Image (tube, rainbow, N blue to C red):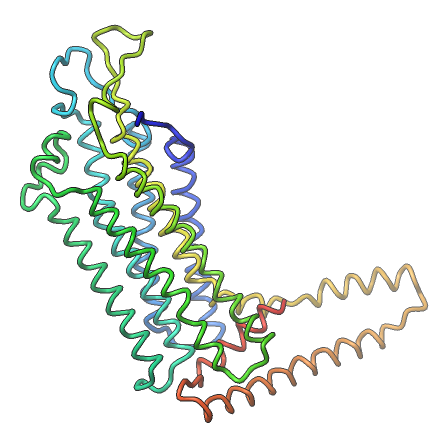
Length: 384
């Protein structure tokens, strides 16, 4: 299959995705910690795990941007005009740099995704589980162990993919073929397991929420907040599809090979092989998945901010405009309506606490303390 350039392999798109998502993640994490301060809640494992994930995602964005700026990432491989040998045997500073970037990426991405997934799971433990011997606790704990082991395994698999022949990682393409494991199959395995764990993590809160003694409407509203994290599943699925396609077509020097452009000297050849496209696509979709994952992991906590953003200033402005245009309107009635609404809101919170206390006494799955407060925040935000 001939190498094809798509928007994900264009320099501008790669830099935009890297910079935008890393900046968005940094802002989201800062707001997450500020929210915890506003809630006067202790920082727990789900909060701390998102910090190394953000650092790793930012580092990935920086190294990818540097690679683009140096003409290594998102650019075709340039072959010197005086080279007559096999293009797969050549080593240039450009080729060495792109392989170094890919290797660093291979090391950081499993750790970043592992921290993101573990943050999701510890957040579920925070709000849903009080009894550590409950079934929910064991299931979530098992998922945490699975995510941890898979992330560490893929980290070391990437670290020693060429065994101890580290020099081969930034050598020629033939050096990689002769000294390293089938790297694309390793990448595909990471994508498959990552997608499966993403689906499991997104589906995990469904039975936990359904057992709460709340109305169906309230359950669905809380579901909607948690399903905001499903964007990570979409990113993971897109990455899996692209990597599956690349592995299926494989790399062939004869098929994808070296193409001479007629406008160039016969001695000047430019590599347009699939390898150049593979590295850039691999980096791009990894950036998207990890960047979106950090942001999605912060969304349930940031719903608290929506609850505390008051619409009253807008209401007062609207009421003032109405009063200016219709002098016969009665501000006292509006104020009474606002008070009644506030009272209903407070009463609904009281009923919610009572419902959750009933749930705690009826089910082995319990929500208490911090969990009750978090669910109230999530439900209040979802109704805005």
